[in-house]
Image (cartoon, rainbow, N blue to C red):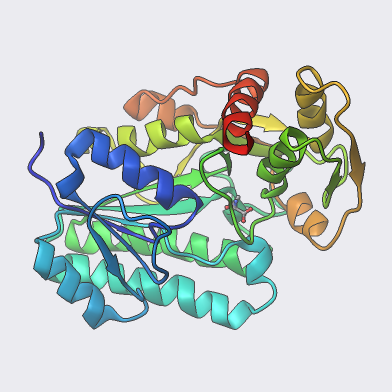
Length: 313
Ligand code: AKB
């Protein structure tokens, strides 16, 4: 067991709730402190209620547990962020500034910052390269692009070890996403398994980069565990899993649930999706710290349906 104390901020969200369990398996239950502004449905270890816009409260937690690593997952996502742009900017940036400053003042050894494919905009045609131009179209994307640059600034200026991934849409059976443009790709499986038809808020052929939750967890911890000299990107690494459209995921589900039905009613999220690339080039992550995804679309579909069937039985 490693001698670490890891603080996860935003631990009750889609990624956080799975990551906390994953980290506890690796480092030990007592080494991972989960925190969130909301109380968890069930506590499975140390939990602290935290509003991460309150820097003093965050500093007190870091001191109390002698935190050595922070995973900062709290953020308002792309679709929800468009409803209240200035509030989204405030929450996404203030929480990250608090993390950066508290980590600096308390010599926290490593920080994980989740960025997103939302940092890319219309300037990228189909495939986003590691160093493609960033012209995000949403306030969420603008905040993530700014956060990436602040990560690099704290690395350059203070030598802080901050590591980051540009997550695609994450698909998992354990938790529900909230407020994102890629959320349909989780919801579709829940409807299919419950024998319901699915109305999709994106058009049939809108291809977006996605990743299965197990691959996302593997990539996250692999990045955080990589030797420091292997990390050549201090803004954020492109990360790719599987790119697919609503029509393709429906077809994959149809191989297991043949009477599954999908219809399309695009809303404001279509425009957000169209501003994002369809493909991500993650060759830098592969080269630097050995990243490889294990899941393709059909393999992910099989596991999603198998796990969700158990849940709804
Ligand atoms: C969203 O849809 O906003 C997120 C993301 C791609 O960052 N899932």
